[in-house]
Length: 296
Image (cartoon, rainbow, N blue to C red; front, side):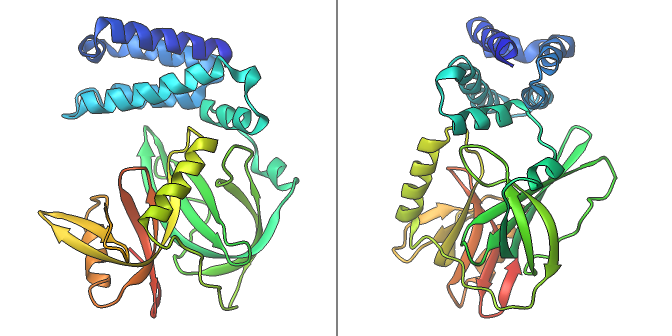
Protein backbone atom coordinates (compact mmCIF):
# COMPACT_ATOMS: atom_id res chain seq x y z
CA UNK A 1 0.00 0.00 0.00
CA UNK A 2 2.80 2.42 0.87
CA UNK A 3 4.55 1.76 -2.45
CA UNK A 4 1.34 2.11 -4.43
CA UNK A 5 0.45 5.38 -2.69
CA UNK A 6 3.90 6.78 -3.47
CA UNK A 7 3.50 5.82 -7.14
CA UNK A 8 0.06 7.45 -7.32
CA UNK A 9 1.39 10.61 -5.69
CA UNK A 10 4.13 10.88 -8.35
CA UNK A 11 1.55 10.19 -11.07
CA UNK A 12 -0.66 13.05 -9.81
CA UNK A 13 2.28 15.47 -9.56
CA UNK A 14 3.36 14.60 -13.12
CA UNK A 15 -0.21 15.20 -14.30
CA UNK A 16 -0.26 18.63 -12.66
CA UNK A 17 3.10 19.60 -14.17
CA UNK A 18 1.98 18.57 -17.65
CA UNK A 19 -1.49 20.09 -17.27
CA UNK A 20 -4.87 18.52 -16.58
CA UNK A 21 -5.83 18.99 -20.22
CA UNK A 22 -3.06 16.57 -21.16
CA UNK A 23 -4.26 14.09 -18.55
CA UNK A 24 -7.79 14.35 -19.91
CA UNK A 25 -6.62 13.48 -23.45
CA UNK A 26 -4.60 10.42 -22.46
CA UNK A 27 -5.72 7.01 -23.69
CA UNK A 28 -7.55 4.48 -21.56
CA UNK A 29 -4.37 2.38 -21.47
CA UNK A 30 -2.45 5.15 -19.71
CA UNK A 31 -5.09 5.34 -17.00
CA UNK A 32 -5.51 1.56 -16.78
CA UNK A 33 -1.79 0.99 -16.24
CA UNK A 34 -1.84 3.18 -13.14
CA UNK A 35 -5.07 1.62 -11.93
CA UNK A 36 -3.62 -1.89 -12.35
CA UNK A 37 -0.54 -0.85 -10.39
CA UNK A 38 -2.76 0.26 -7.50
CA UNK A 39 -4.69 -3.02 -7.58
CA UNK A 40 -1.40 -4.96 -7.40
CA UNK A 41 -0.48 -2.89 -4.35
CA UNK A 42 -3.71 -3.78 -2.51
CA UNK A 43 -5.18 -0.31 -3.11
CA UNK A 44 -8.34 -1.54 -4.79
CA UNK A 45 -10.50 1.36 -3.62
CA UNK A 46 -8.09 3.93 -5.09
CA UNK A 47 -7.85 1.92 -8.30
CA UNK A 48 -11.64 2.00 -8.63
CA UNK A 49 -11.73 5.75 -8.01
CA UNK A 50 -9.12 6.27 -10.73
CA UNK A 51 -11.12 4.22 -13.26
CA UNK A 52 -14.27 6.18 -12.43
CA UNK A 53 -12.34 9.43 -12.93
CA UNK A 54 -11.12 8.10 -16.28
CA UNK A 55 -14.70 7.54 -17.42
CA UNK A 56 -15.72 11.08 -16.43
CA UNK A 57 -13.08 12.91 -18.42
CA UNK A 58 -15.60 13.73 -21.18
CA UNK A 59 -18.12 15.27 -18.79
CA UNK A 60 -18.91 18.96 -19.16
CA UNK A 61 -17.65 19.64 -15.62
CA UNK A 62 -14.57 17.42 -15.98
CA UNK A 63 -12.13 20.08 -14.75
CA UNK A 64 -13.97 20.59 -11.46
CA UNK A 65 -14.27 16.81 -11.03
CA UNK A 66 -10.55 16.31 -11.73
CA UNK A 67 -9.51 19.03 -9.29
CA UNK A 68 -11.64 17.65 -6.44
CA UNK A 69 -10.83 13.99 -6.95
CA UNK A 70 -7.09 14.44 -7.53
CA UNK A 71 -6.90 16.63 -4.42
CA UNK A 72 -8.60 13.91 -2.36
CA UNK A 73 -6.34 11.21 -3.77
CA UNK A 74 -3.24 13.33 -3.14
CA UNK A 75 -4.30 13.82 0.50
CA UNK A 76 -4.63 10.07 0.94
CA UNK A 77 -1.23 9.42 -0.65
CA UNK A 78 0.47 12.11 1.46
CA UNK A 79 -1.03 10.62 4.60
CA UNK A 80 0.21 7.13 3.71
CA UNK A 81 3.72 8.60 3.67
CA UNK A 82 3.22 9.47 7.36
CA UNK A 83 1.50 6.22 8.26
CA UNK A 84 3.80 5.24 11.14
CA UNK A 85 3.28 8.59 12.88
CA UNK A 86 -0.53 8.47 12.78
CA UNK A 87 -2.73 7.52 15.74
CA UNK A 88 -4.18 4.01 15.50
CA UNK A 89 -7.71 5.17 14.65
CA UNK A 90 -6.46 7.23 11.71
CA UNK A 91 -4.27 4.35 10.53
CA UNK A 92 -7.37 2.18 10.43
CA UNK A 93 -9.25 4.87 8.52
CA UNK A 94 -6.44 5.16 5.99
CA UNK A 95 -6.47 1.40 5.39
CA UNK A 96 -10.22 1.67 4.76
CA UNK A 97 -9.62 4.42 2.22
CA UNK A 98 -7.07 2.25 0.46
CA UNK A 99 -9.45 -0.67 0.16
CA UNK A 100 -8.71 -2.96 3.11
CA UNK A 101 -11.52 -5.50 3.48
CA UNK A 102 -12.83 -7.01 6.71
CA UNK A 103 -15.24 -9.91 6.59
CA UNK A 104 -18.51 -9.19 8.36
CA UNK A 105 -18.42 -12.57 10.08
CA UNK A 106 -15.05 -11.70 11.63
CA UNK A 107 -16.27 -8.25 12.65
CA UNK A 108 -19.39 -9.60 14.35
CA UNK A 109 -17.27 -11.87 16.53
CA UNK A 110 -15.82 -8.77 18.15
CA UNK A 111 -17.61 -6.11 20.22
CA UNK A 112 -21.21 -5.49 19.17
CA UNK A 113 -23.82 -2.93 20.23
CA UNK A 114 -27.39 -4.04 20.78
CA UNK A 115 -30.15 -1.51 20.23
CA UNK A 116 -33.52 -0.86 18.64
CA UNK A 117 -32.75 0.50 15.19
CA UNK A 118 -34.91 2.71 13.00
CA UNK A 119 -34.40 2.61 9.21
CA UNK A 120 -34.04 6.25 8.17
CA UNK A 121 -33.07 6.20 4.53
CA UNK A 122 -31.52 4.47 1.54
CA UNK A 123 -29.27 5.63 -1.28
CA UNK A 124 -28.36 3.68 -4.42
CA UNK A 125 -25.60 4.06 -6.97
CA UNK A 126 -23.50 2.26 -9.57
CA UNK A 127 -19.74 2.09 -10.02
CA UNK A 128 -18.70 0.22 -13.14
CA UNK A 129 -20.46 -3.21 -12.93
CA UNK A 130 -21.07 -2.92 -9.21
CA UNK A 131 -24.24 -1.52 -7.64
CA UNK A 132 -24.09 -0.17 -4.11
CA UNK A 133 -26.68 0.70 -1.49
CA UNK A 134 -26.31 2.79 1.65
CA UNK A 135 -28.88 2.08 4.37
CA UNK A 136 -28.93 4.40 7.38
CA UNK A 137 -30.05 3.18 10.80
CA UNK A 138 -30.55 5.15 14.02
CA UNK A 139 -30.11 3.57 17.43
CA UNK A 140 -32.91 4.47 19.86
CA UNK A 141 -30.95 3.91 23.09
CA UNK A 142 -27.49 5.12 22.13
CA UNK A 143 -28.80 7.86 19.81
CA UNK A 144 -26.20 7.22 17.11
CA UNK A 145 -26.29 6.26 13.43
CA UNK A 146 -25.09 3.09 11.74
CA UNK A 147 -24.44 2.68 8.03
CA UNK A 148 -25.04 -0.62 6.26
CA UNK A 149 -23.15 -0.70 2.95
CA UNK A 150 -24.19 -3.44 0.52
CA UNK A 151 -23.01 -4.36 -2.96
CA UNK A 152 -24.55 -6.34 -5.80
CA UNK A 153 -23.03 -7.28 -9.15
CA UNK A 154 -24.96 -5.99 -12.16
CA UNK A 155 -28.57 -7.21 -11.94
CA UNK A 156 -28.17 -9.38 -8.85
CA UNK A 157 -30.57 -8.43 -6.01
CA UNK A 158 -29.34 -7.15 -2.66
CA UNK A 159 -29.46 -9.79 0.07
CA UNK A 160 -31.84 -7.89 2.34
CA UNK A 161 -34.52 -5.34 1.61
CA UNK A 162 -35.17 -2.51 4.07
CA UNK A 163 -38.31 -0.45 4.50
CA UNK A 164 -37.78 3.13 5.59
CA UNK A 165 -39.62 3.69 8.87
CA UNK A 166 -39.33 0.06 10.02
CA UNK A 167 -37.80 -0.66 13.43
CA UNK A 168 -35.99 -3.79 14.57
CA UNK A 169 -33.92 -5.06 17.47
CA UNK A 170 -30.44 -6.26 16.65
CA UNK A 171 -26.72 -6.00 17.22
CA UNK A 172 -24.24 -4.17 15.04
CA UNK A 173 -20.46 -4.14 14.97
CA UNK A 174 -18.76 -0.98 13.77
CA UNK A 175 -15.83 -1.15 11.39
CA UNK A 176 -12.59 0.22 12.86
CA UNK A 177 -11.66 3.75 11.89
CA UNK A 178 -11.52 7.36 12.97
CA UNK A 179 -15.31 7.72 12.61
CA UNK A 180 -17.71 5.00 13.69
CA UNK A 181 -20.35 4.95 10.98
CA UNK A 182 -20.18 1.87 8.80
CA UNK A 183 -21.37 -1.26 10.59
CA UNK A 184 -22.19 -4.92 10.05
CA UNK A 185 -25.55 -6.21 11.23
CA UNK A 186 -25.92 -9.49 13.07
CA UNK A 187 -29.14 -11.26 13.93
CA UNK A 188 -32.22 -9.07 14.20
CA UNK A 189 -35.99 -9.20 14.69
CA UNK A 190 -38.71 -6.68 13.99
CA UNK A 191 -39.73 -4.47 16.90
CA UNK A 192 -43.04 -2.81 17.73
CA UNK A 193 -41.73 -0.86 20.71
CA UNK A 194 -42.11 2.94 20.47
CA UNK A 195 -38.93 4.63 19.29
CA UNK A 196 -37.34 7.54 21.12
CA UNK A 197 -37.29 10.80 19.17
CA UNK A 198 -33.83 11.03 17.55
CA UNK A 199 -31.53 13.68 18.96
CA UNK A 200 -30.90 16.42 16.44
CA UNK A 201 -28.95 19.57 15.68
CA UNK A 202 -30.80 22.64 16.95
CA UNK A 203 -29.72 24.75 13.95
CA UNK A 204 -27.21 24.91 11.13
CA UNK A 205 -24.59 26.62 13.31
CA UNK A 206 -24.67 23.58 15.58
CA UNK A 207 -24.34 21.36 12.50
CA UNK A 208 -21.32 23.33 11.25
CA UNK A 209 -19.54 23.07 14.60
CA UNK A 210 -20.18 19.34 14.89
CA UNK A 211 -19.08 18.71 11.31
CA UNK A 212 -15.88 20.74 11.80
CA UNK A 213 -15.04 18.66 14.88
CA UNK A 214 -15.69 15.43 12.96
CA UNK A 215 -13.40 16.61 10.13
CA UNK A 216 -10.64 17.44 12.61
CA UNK A 217 -10.69 13.80 13.73
CA UNK A 218 -11.12 12.33 10.25
CA UNK A 219 -9.97 14.41 7.25
CA UNK A 220 -11.21 11.64 4.91
CA UNK A 221 -14.79 12.01 6.08
CA UNK A 222 -17.06 12.09 3.06
CA UNK A 223 -20.75 11.62 3.71
CA UNK A 224 -21.85 12.75 7.16
CA UNK A 225 -25.31 11.82 8.56
CA UNK A 226 -27.23 14.69 10.16
CA UNK A 227 -30.52 15.00 12.02
CA UNK A 228 -32.01 18.51 11.84
CA UNK A 229 -34.84 19.75 14.04
CA UNK A 230 -37.82 21.95 13.08
CA UNK A 231 -36.86 22.60 9.48
CA UNK A 232 -38.84 23.91 6.54
CA UNK A 233 -37.99 24.52 2.89
CA UNK A 234 -37.86 27.48 0.55
CA UNK A 235 -37.66 27.60 -3.26
CA UNK A 236 -35.67 30.31 -5.00
CA UNK A 237 -34.70 30.51 -8.69
CA UNK A 238 -35.26 26.83 -9.37
CA UNK A 239 -33.39 25.60 -6.28
CA UNK A 240 -34.71 24.44 -2.92
CA UNK A 241 -33.13 25.35 0.40
CA UNK A 242 -33.65 23.96 3.89
CA UNK A 243 -34.33 26.55 6.60
CA UNK A 244 -33.68 26.22 10.32
CA UNK A 245 -35.39 28.10 13.15
CA UNK A 246 -32.95 31.02 12.75
CA UNK A 247 -33.79 31.25 9.03
CA UNK A 248 -30.31 30.11 8.14
CA UNK A 249 -30.39 28.10 4.94
CA UNK A 250 -28.49 25.32 3.21
CA UNK A 251 -29.03 24.01 -0.33
CA UNK A 252 -30.82 20.71 -0.87
CA UNK A 253 -29.07 18.52 -3.41
CA UNK A 254 -30.90 18.40 -6.72
CA UNK A 255 -32.05 14.82 -7.15
CA UNK A 256 -35.10 14.23 -9.33
CA UNK A 257 -38.19 15.37 -7.37
CA UNK A 258 -36.65 14.95 -3.91
CA UNK A 259 -36.15 18.69 -3.10
CA UNK A 260 -39.72 19.46 -4.18
CA UNK A 261 -41.07 16.65 -2.01
CA UNK A 262 -39.34 18.27 0.97
CA UNK A 263 -40.85 21.61 0.02
CA UNK A 264 -44.35 20.13 -0.14
CA UNK A 265 -44.02 18.08 3.06
CA UNK A 266 -42.86 21.04 5.16
CA UNK A 267 -45.27 23.61 3.70
CA UNK A 268 -47.67 23.48 6.66
CA UNK A 269 -45.51 22.11 9.46
CA UNK A 270 -41.83 22.12 10.37
CA UNK A 271 -40.41 18.64 10.74
CA UNK A 272 -37.44 16.59 11.85
CA UNK A 273 -35.19 15.84 8.92
CA UNK A 274 -32.53 13.20 8.28
CA UNK A 275 -30.02 13.92 5.53
CA UNK A 276 -26.55 13.20 4.19
CA UNK A 277 -24.24 16.22 4.35
CA UNK A 278 -21.14 16.48 2.16
CA UNK A 279 -19.98 19.90 3.36
CA UNK A 280 -21.81 21.74 0.58
CA UNK A 281 -25.31 20.30 0.11
CA UNK A 282 -27.90 18.33 2.03
CA UNK A 283 -29.35 15.18 0.50
CA UNK A 284 -32.60 14.72 2.41
CA UNK A 285 -33.59 11.06 2.87
CA UNK A 286 -36.56 11.24 5.24
CA UNK A 287 -38.76 13.53 7.31
CA UNK A 288 -40.19 12.65 10.71
CA UNK A 289 -43.43 14.29 11.81
CA UNK A 290 -46.87 13.52 13.18
CA UNK A 291 -47.48 10.96 10.44
CA UNK A 292 -44.27 9.09 11.28
CA UNK A 293 -41.24 8.52 9.09
CA UNK A 294 -41.76 9.61 5.48
CA UNK A 295 -39.21 8.54 2.89
CA UNK A 296 -38.20 11.32 0.49
